Amino acid sequence: MISIYKPSDFHVHLREGEILNQALKENIAYFQKILVMPNLKKPITNSKRLISYRNQIESINKNKIKIFFTIYLNSEWSTKEIVNCYKNKLFFAAKLYPKNATTNSKTGFSDIKDLTKYFYILEKHNIPLCLHGESISYQDDPFDREKKFLEKELSWLRKHFPNLKITLEHITTKDAVDYVKENKNISASITTHHLLENTNSFLGDSLKPELFCKPIIKNRNHQISLQKIALSGHKNFFFGSDSAPHYKKLKFNNECCAGVYSTKYSISNIIEFFSLNKKTKNLNKFLSLNGNTHYGLDFLKKEISFKKIKNYKFQKLSKCGDDFLCHYNHFKDYWSKI
Ligand code: NCD
Ligand code: ZN
Image (cartoon, rainbow, N blue to C red; front, side, top):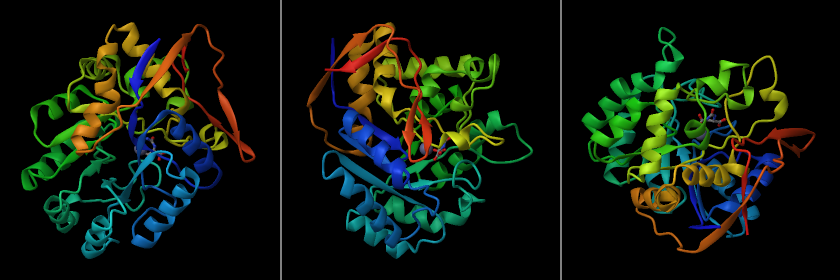
């Protein structure tokens, strides 16, 4: 048996409608706190959409868990509106997407410098900035996008806004691990699938659409550096699942949407991974302490316990509306809540 504080997930996609219903229920079962991403079909680029999305979510949640919201930072916002919404505690962090980097990012930035006036506001009011850290250039290899982002956009941002609190989201490379270790005011979130998969499992034998996500899963060397830093409990690295449900017909199609839906088995997978590596003493750091400390948040020291079930029959698909969602799982054994 293993007992841990009820975890926090600092990067989830809940979507809307039927998917929201299902994804939120799964989050309520495992997390005491989640940070919800703003990349809806119509992204959260004004207070009206923010309030409406909050209401949709809170009417299902009914205060069962703590839900923190993000806004989709682009030039549709006025700086005044951002400050007002923040002061009224309508959102917790701003999220920045490069144009066309991922799902629903058409209205992301082309040149980060165009958003300078917003970074002043974020820095001044201590509003955290969450980054989708990929530089998009069709001259470069997609596997190099994260590294390029560190060299280009992130270095610029840190040089001009050294006091801005930054989260580099869903990191995938040794370069990102090193960058975060060497710099101040920056932490990184790590997903379950980037910890447990690499290019061999993703496309070595056959191509696995269910593992296609942004940033793309990297090779074994990068995976090892993510694994080492997560297992070490280093204070600047914490869990953010980036659980991103897509309907099956959109994942298994001519074109495959980017996103891995991991919520249902994430905590089981993370426990098994720390347990196999004899590092369960650092589970609370990775799943609770580090993220909450980075964001300056309190958390409930309420424990939940898990027991291991060998050779569990994992549910691969669940019905959602007239389609299905595909659940991500890695290990054969299951850590079940008791
Ligand atoms: C996410 C999604 O589907 O919303 N997809 C993904 O591959 N991770 C967006 C994101 O965080 O990149
Ligand atoms: Zn995401």
